[in-house]
Length: 387
Image (cartoon, rainbow, N blue to C red):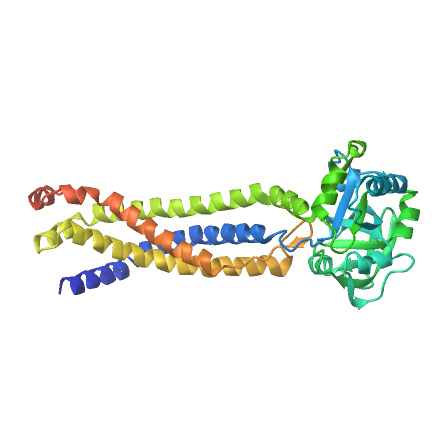
């Protein structure tokens, strides 16, 4: 009987005070939307790089202390010297061949993307590129990765300005080893275009099947004659990538937690305002048999209904905002598209934290009820005081 009375009271009050209830729900929805957007960003960044590169039997060589890939300067003589010295000093051998890569930046669709110049043989054998559509590039032509085409909207036949010359996209390629948005140019064309001669940015050391990559890397990295070079394995490259986005991921998590904390303050303010405005009704409820704990659960029930309604609305709002953003332009970092979606764990954690916020806010707002007797409440009621 008491439970039915409480539910009826909550329902009547929500309907009677529908304007404030709606504003409360909308406020919660906005905070929940922020939580979901930041959580999706954090999840996307967590997955970022996991499948970005996959070169298990390759070591990348750059000049030491290069801030950017384009700052590196290597020559064929450098590569030959390193490889020959390794073979003569190490019993492990293991280096089958090496390939030079010219790396530059190109402006396309108002953003800068990486241009990699390599031979067509290396495009297929080294990077595992396969044509989705179009043809392999010939003179004044380039191919672009699938993610590049998706982000920029540029496809076959489109023109890309590269170092003062116009290049035509002849094909779109896909690779399971390298998913970043890249423009691929034939090596000979890049040499002519940039007048680079024998200078390139990255040397790719291809290891024999079964070779111990860690052992070879340690020998190359710690050989005194190689101090002017830096060598990277696949896991080290991924670590660098994760380190780059870690601060953004942590900031996204922090903003999401702040949004949920604001919901706790909102629940506290809503419960406090309700207690102040309806102190007479609450006093009458206590007179007819409701204890302080019952009042608390009544407030919690009302607040939870609003919070859950706002949570569902915020979830839908976040999904809609994400779809609108991705419909305009894919969300990407360094040309790698982020997969933004609400995971089951994010949804579940959000529900739990919102419920905890409701409990915390109501508990803080109604603490005084436990210490206030009915006689004191009636005295305040007779004097017209609230709280």
